[in-house]
Image (cartoon, rainbow, N blue to C red; front, side, top):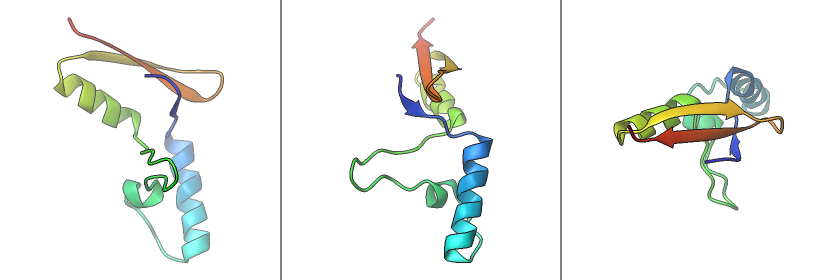
Length: 78
């Protein structure tokens, strides 16, 4: 899988701050900070979400952050 948005600590912190300023309230749930994109239906996943999904299916996974700041995940089955 390639081209996945990199949702790391910095992106979470930015969304948290932005949400606090816009809504004036504390939002701590990941899915509230990163809702499904209404136009494309895209979902946001953390690296831990990908690893959990892939490993549950019996894959070994690794990732690389690309120069474009997107992430490429490679999974193989032993």
